[in-house]
Image: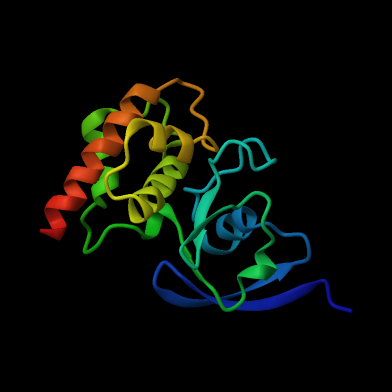
Length: 161
C-alpha cells in the first residue's frame, strides 16, 4: 500500500495537484510543495491560529488537518487574498491600525477576520473577541486588532455600496 497519494484541489483560485504523504499536514504541504509560508505552525496543537487557512470557505487549523483531506476542495491562504495586486480590505486595515508587532500571527488573524466579517459584517467588540478566541498574539496587539476589525468592516461596507 502506497504511503503517498496524489490530491487535486484549487489553491488560491488555480487548479493544482500534489503528491502528499500519509500524515502530512496542510501547513507542511503548503510549505514543501507550493512554497507558501504564510500559514505557519506555531503551537502544533490547533490552539494559536497561526496556521489558519480556509477550506471550502471554512477556517481550519493547518497544523492539525491532514493534506489528504484537501482532495477536491478549494483552499485559500493569506497569499491568495486580495485582487489584481491590491491588498484585501482586511490586510489594509491591519496595516493602517498597526495591528501587528512581530507579524508571526498576523496571517492567521487576517484569515479569521475575513471569515468573521463574511458571517457578521458589523460585529461588536464582544463578537470579535469571541470569534478570535482561537488566535493568539504573543506581542499583545489585541487593541489594535480590534481597531483593525472595525476598520475592515467599514472598508468592506464602503466597497459594497
